[in-house]
Image (cartoon, rainbow, N blue to C red; front, side, top):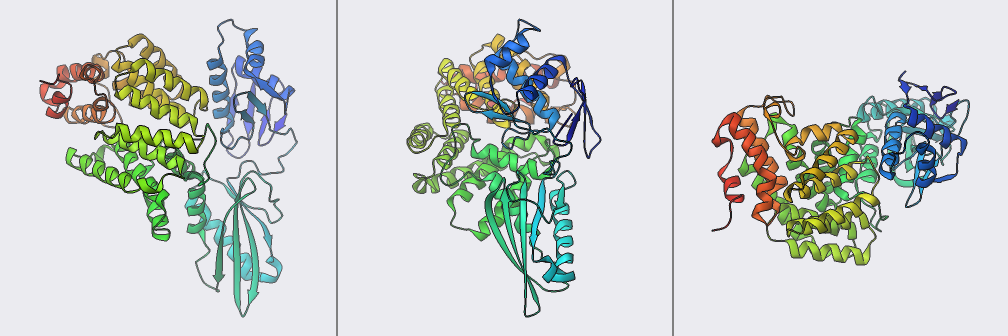
Amino acid sequence: MRYLDIEFSTDFLTADRDGDGVSLAFTRQERTLLQHFTANSGRLLNRSDLLSVLGEQSENISDRHVDFLINQLRRKLQDTPRAPRFIRTQYGEGYVWVAPRSPQSAENPDAFLIIGPVRGLRRGGVEAQNYIVQLTEGLHAGLGPDRKVIVDETSRLGTQHFTIEVVFHRHDGILHAALLLRHAGQFIGMKRIDHRAGSNDVGTEDIIQAIWSHLALPPPSGGLPDDLPPWIRQHDAALILSGNPDKVSWRDNARMLEKAMDESPHDQRLRVMWALNLYARLLQSMSEPDQWLSQHEWQAIEREIEETSLSVLAGLQWMPEMGLAVAKLLLFVNNDHTVLAEGLVDQALRHGSAFATAAALRGEIAAIEGEIDAACQLYDEALELSEPGTEFFIYLMLLKASALRAGNRLDELQALAEQLRKTAPLAHARLALLLSPSLGASQTSRNLVGAELTSSVAAQMLQLLYNVFGRRFKNAEHRRNIMNAPIAAFSIAFGDDVVSEKIRCGISDPA
């Protein structure tokens, strides 16, 4: 049985995906879901329906387990919640199998971008044909080998991919080309090229920039209740275009933002996104052992984040998602902006509908103020509204983990850490200092984040943990709960000097 680019065995035990030669294997519960989905193609299946099907195999099945299985299927099928090919989420209701069954996909499902339809090719002659070759090669090089670009001169405009409609017109010896970029049929932008023979300017960089902007920037008119916050959108955009889910994203985004700001220097959204990318640089600094930031460099970046955030406040009233982004940044720099951030969240709720992001930020504010129970309830609300397995979902789990650790609720922390280990093993491994209820010798002797765990690395890790999570709690006991276990483990391994004076002061009770 073929659905799009995957050929399934009749019992759904295995499947083969076109193009990369990958063979897939499915667990018993995954097979049960696949059989039920495909037998009810196009029908809305709520969680109760899916629970009843799975419940015949085990009594220990919950809503969260259904979401976990859906997430595992999506990973195997290379499906995404934002652009579903197989399983679509019906917000607040359930799931729908949307992949058509056919002997061969009519929509090139393994393509990331389709060049087509192409109009005026015959009148454009050899030069137009060469132009299409140059454009294809340029996009291949710019997007990388994991993002397939194909030419389909008769492609339909309603396809679910990124598409470039090319329209040629020759006049006075010059080949004019209009490139119309769409995503899932939605018009994104147009690039006009006046192409002369021998020219290498085919518009590749502008097309990639437009795709990045579409993926990274929230729509000016506001989004849906479960839309990703701007800082997650931007991170995801870089990873989608790079094709590498483990890649550090801030460098790619910095290049895109610099070009976008040169072209639109007065766009306040881009200034906020620049500050968000600086925030991403700080968070990702531990993933680049050869690029670790000194405390002086860290503080300089935080000052730029703060100054940029405060400078755009006047223009945020009608950009609710950007207001939420600024609130996030002001909470992060930890410089007595809690009241201002809370006001921005309230303003965003009056003018927008980004409920999941707003609940997460309200949870952060509650945690900062020491209201751990309220913070966890708000994080749970945001988790319920978000798509399981996404970067936003993982981010929310980490926020809740920090609140649980601050509140010394270690049994709940252990359960959450185990859930995260199954959902995002890489994030779980990198954040062992936060997620492990206790730390032993095995966790202070192994290699972490690609670097040998020396006293210098340990000091950097402690400082990063404190900067990102520990210092944000106003209650000194909560700060100690975040830091005590890793401090104790690293001090035994490397001595007391591994703990900076800033951390020692931060976890001490005020005189």
